[in-house]
Image (cartoon, rainbow, N blue to C red):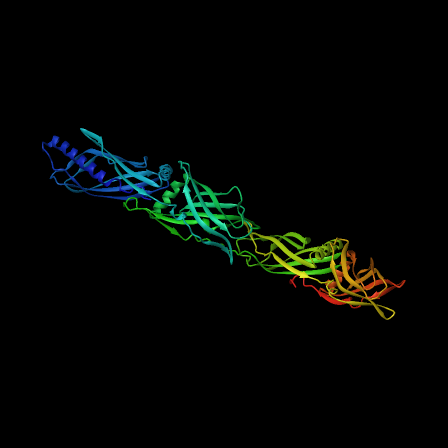
Length: 604
């Protein structure tokens, strides 16, 4: 940032001195009668910083003048000059009257920059696209000749925000978890005044997670050589929706009244400045407010100047030095269980969460917000939410609900209506509250299925009907299937073909059934049939029986207590009227016993 690049107008001073001594020579000629003395020449001009205080910055200029004459030139002339940066006059100087003896002469000139002018210059530099023209404007004051001399201008540029403009593609991770991918960052100046300079910077990020990531309060500091020139926080939370790209924007304002302090530090640091833009998130802990760096938004840039030596300004990016010192918690396992109780069936899911952050983490307290839902077909088994503060290491969270008898009956009705199949769905929304931000914790939704086959034993069997030792009929093509179940009852629709083997007609009056599971009687009743089959004829019969669903909860408890295992016994009989007599025929061939096992969480 070459503020005076050009050494106080080397050429200008040379011209001034040359004109001064020429004018002085003219004065001497008038006094001594010597006509046309040889003009002195300027051999060199050197500049260096003088005394630097909080109020002023001294500039010392040494001009080497050679007087080739055998006589000295008396001090009858002087030179004054102003130094301006972008039309902001920052310094004024006056050599006083000069006397030039014969031979080599060193002329020392001194002036001082008013540090209070630095904010106004800075505003002009920013508003001019980080470009400054340094002008040395000399003027001559001598007998018979006083006038302004040509200004000497030199221009320099800085590019302090170049490092902020990037397309990094870097990932912001917490442990093995990618939280965000940084697509690009950029920064820009607003319209500066002598009092303040707007500085806007942003990061365009992609959230690859299904759930949103939300930053509560984002703060920032901008310092130049440890002189804080801006600090503040955002007014609103920043939310990046899941699987979307958005921008995090920070609008800061530099306090230009601090720039005179920075200017002094810049010169005392051999004209080098570290511009440090630090973006952080704030988290409240028991020990107060902590700051967690957001390195993808933070930058450190060093720039150097060579103001009096005429060198160019240089800029280089430094390591921002900030990174996340925490890891997102992870779900290690999910354990589910049914437990029969006096009040119903207790359904429990235990979620084991690992918090890898120790007590030394900058987070302080880390909390987990979890909403957890388990459904059996369309019946909600668990719908629970909780907030838990995680200790370092292993944590267990329990989500539970007790399914009352009515809920179990509704589930069973859905199980029957789905063909004795239940889909167990687990859905969750788990978020780690880091204090400064909310980040999703991966707990994948799961879908598992289990089946039963309570009525499958009847299909395809054949049964003889005997009366007094004679075969009078044959029942064949028997089948059963569920009707549309309700909370109260589960219909069982029976069909079969009955062949009358005799010449006399017979009537199937009633169809009886008994269903037990683990000794719990689920059905024990008869259904009216009333179908007459003429002699030597085959007719179809139909009947509907019912499972009383109010017995299902009792069976389910027994089923769970027995390790999700049940012995199901199904027996049938028919009541037949033949030859004027009514008798009961046990359908032993159609009756059956089978084992029903479920593994509600293993999908078997």
